[in-house]
Structures are given as C-alpha cells and as structure tokens.
Image (cartoon, rainbow, N blue to C red; front, side, top):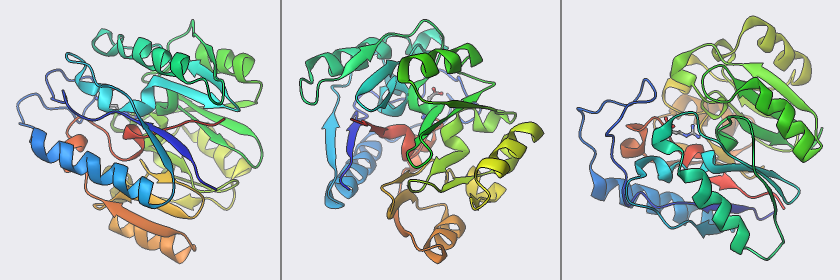
Amino acid sequence: MPRTYLMCPPAYFTVKYAINPWMDTTSPVDADLAGKQWERLRETLVELGHRVHVLTPQAGLPDMVYAANGAFSVDGTVYGARFRYPQRAAEAAAHQAFYAIQDEPGWRFVAPTEINEGEGDFTYVPGPGLILAGYGFRTEPTAHAEAQEVLGRPVISLRLVDPRFYHLDMALAPLDDTTIAYYPAAFSASSQAVLRQLFPDAVLASEPDALAFGLNLVSDGRNVVLSSEATALADRLAAAGYLPRLVELTELKKGGGSVKCCVAELRS
Ligand code: ARG
C-alpha cells in the first residue's frame, strides 16, 4: 500500500544549540552534504511508490528538517505538537498551516494543550489499532491521555529511561501492521514487560543497532528504509523477510536524528 509522507528540506539545518546528547555545537555540519543525503532519502521513498509532501523550511528553525516531530495523525485526525524546548516551538504552527491547506483528504487538526513532540513520541500499530507513546524526556504523559481522547484509539504509555534515546522513535518502530522492532534497554523494566506482553514476536535490536540509529526507520510493511550504519539490524530484518533499503544520513545524525525523524507519516 502506498503511503503518504511529509518531509522538510534541511535548508537551514545547523547545530547551534544542544537539546539532546547527540548535538555538539562545536562539530561542524556539511550543509551541502546534508541536503544531498536528505534528497536521496526523499527519492528512495518516491522510488518505492510513496507520495512525499514537502514542507517549506523556515530560517531560524534549524531542526525543522525533523518533520516527524510536528504532529501525529491517525485516520485523518491530526493531533498537533507542542514542543518541549523554546528553540523548536515555532515549528508547530508551520505544521498546523500545512494541514490547513490540504483539502484532500480533509484533515481534522486538533491543537494540543499538553507538551508532545508528534511522531517523535507517538506511533501507530494498525493491526491491533494501538497507539504506542513514549515519555520521560520530551512528551508529557498527560499528552498520552489527550491523544487518546483526540484520536479515539487506546494509547499504551511507555517510559523511556536512557537519554540517548530521548524520543520513542529512537528506540522502537513498527515494521508492518502487527510487528514492531525495539531496543529493550531504552525502556523501564515495566514498560519492557508491557512490550513483551503485547509484541511477543518483536524484532529485538542490540545496543549497537540502536546507537547506529537503526530503529529510527521508516517501513511500509515490506521495504524498511534505515540508516546505512545499522548493518546488523538490516541483516536481521532481511532474515525476517523485510527488504532493507539503506540510506546515508551522517549529517542529520549530528542533530540527533535519522530516517524516521525526517519523515512524518500522514495517516488518512
Ligand atoms: N535536534 C532535534 C531535537 O532534539 C532532533 C529531533 C529528532 N527527531 C525525532 N523524531 N527523534 O529535538
């Protein structure tokens, strides 16, 4: 099934503040290379048959390239983001404006009250119809309840405990309608028990896989687009029957993100 995505080019991408452990303001970013790597990611999704909308980047919002953080949608309802840090706050309005001008398929946008970073901390598993939601670093647990009210799907709250995996999408990703991949140690012991109960057949990633940003992937149920550094995870996914599509995103890693961070899925 073709998917619909939203991406934002890294036209103003830099690392000029540090709001996660991966960001080092003293290490330079190759802007030209960042642009090429981003374009290659966009082309990969298009070549796989998916539709990619492009959000207009804004000067002064260097993290806008991480489009996944701007909202979270299920069944045409869009739950807007409210960023934790002031440096990113203005991104939320840019995403809201995007949905306002899309008249097809008619998005219903709901502005949030609670702090949440969109698909950074929310994901959807269509088979059981479950929303999985992270908290501990960015999104407030109160936003999980708000998302459940807005979207009308059960929300499973998962506590993240390792600051290197500050968003859910650094540590967990759906692979198809019923299967997920995750790195257990990124979660509290109780949240690990919840994941084992719900997803006994999950693909478990190793610490090196997770540190290579391997779980920050985008899957269409068959093709799995992931960082070229995550070779061990790519092999494991291939053995499980998926088709890994490796992309290089070394520059965007300097901001603390990879494939998934750059790609919001629009679920209509
Ligand atoms: N520099 C960004 C931040 O710390 C990176 C966001 C990564 N996005 C993601 N979906 N995990 O907010």
